[in-house]
Structures are given as C-alpha cells and as structure tokens.
Length: 284
Image 1 (cartoon, helix red, strand yellow):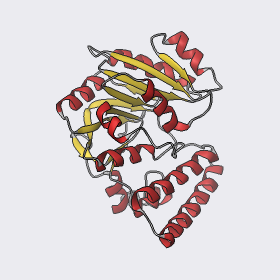
Image 2 (tube, helix red, strand yellow):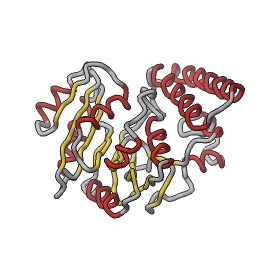
Image 3 (cartoon, helix red, strand yellow):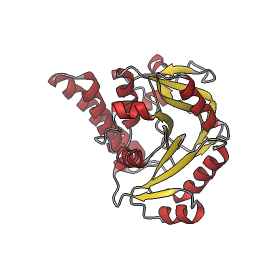
Image 4 (cartoon, helix red, strand yellow):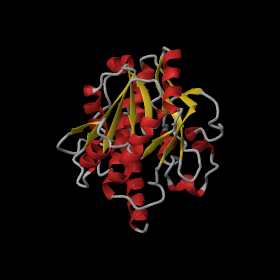
C-alpha cells in the first residue's frame, strides 16, 4: 500500500464528501486506503461518508478524542508506507498526492512533506513556520498585535512571510491540516501527543521528529485548498481555551522552564486568552 489517508471528522458533513472526492481525483497510480475517523459527530457525518464514499472506511470512536486522539486511532489502523493526515475541510489538488509521495521517496531523511495551502479566496496560507519562541505568544497568526502591525519582524520570522512559498525547502514545522508522513518516522517518534486536544499537536510532532534527525519539508508543487476561517468568525470558547492550554503544554515540554518562567508564561497566556474570549464574544 503506497499510502493511507487519515481524515478526522467532527460534525464535518458539510465538507467531507468534497474532501474525499478530491482524493479520488488525485490518486493517480498510487495504491491508497482512506480511513475516516469520526469523533462522535452529531450531524450524520458517518452516514454521509458511508453513502457518498463507500470506498472509505469509517472508524467511529464513540467519543470526541480530540484531533491528536483521532489521528492516533487512524494511525493504528493504517497499513500504508506513508500516511496522509488530512483535515476534512481540505480539497486536494490533482497533482498533490503524487508530488508529496515522490518527494518522500526521493528524500529518505524527510519525515513529513507538506503542500502549499491555499485559502478559498486565493491567498496562500502561512502553513510552514519556525518553531514558536516567546515572541510567538504575542505575534502569532491570529494575535491582535499581528493584525494591528502585520509587518512586525517577529510575525514575519515566525510565519516565514518574507518567503514567497513558491520554492521547496525544509522548515521547522507545518500545519497538520495536510501532511504526508513517513511510517518509519512515526514508528520512531510515536503518534501525536494526546495531551493536546486540538491545536499545537502538529508543531509538537514536527519538533519531536526533527529532534530525532528527520526533516520537515514544504513542497509547493503539491497544492491543497483549505477552508480555514477561525481568524474571521466567532468560535466556541473551548477552542480558544484549548489553543492556549496547548501553547502552555508545548512551552513546558520543549523549553523546560523553571517555576518563575512558567508562572510568567502562564500569566501571559491567561491574559491573552481572556482578551481573545472578549473579542470573540463581539464577533458575528
């Protein structure tokens, strides 16, 4: 089996069939299995997949395990030499699977190959980044400071926004919305850290693999449309809380702070979370 595709769904009925049909168009000569791991959707997502994409295998978890938990359930069932971890709101370009697969075959020390992500409005998503430093607490993709001062040097460095995203290169980490992962690297690094319910599990996984000597590579010849919109619409309070809890877990895991450092970062994150909750409450 050339590759397994793991798509984790939660109330994803509106997007899932477009995602799965794009995989069929992109398959080409590759042998492929598709595993849809459903985290207890209440909108009929599993039934939609079974009726509209009968070649996909549905794995119902029975509970919301979070993104990392859902991915790990899919990894355990996957048999491919490479595993495509894919969000259900992605539409895969016709050349994307072949380009990512060819890249991993030709670069044996690459653990993760990721495509260029496009937003529906035609903008490139800044999906390949440097590892987050302390400055990323204030100048990340969704922060108010980045929106008020988009050209600041900390955001540019973190988001690699001075790079045109048109050339292949190794990066620190890539978005978990779409990544093709080498099975040998998964076997060495393990699955995603389930201490993250959602968000930050992708940067953690990339960081772990890079510490083990693997590379994480951006492959612009592979193109995927991603309907991300969290920065422009109201989200649930839980999403904001989980994002900040994950940021703290990542900081503790990879920066090994002393007690004072941890307290300062926790205070900053708590303040930032409160401001984002307040701003979110006034969104339409």
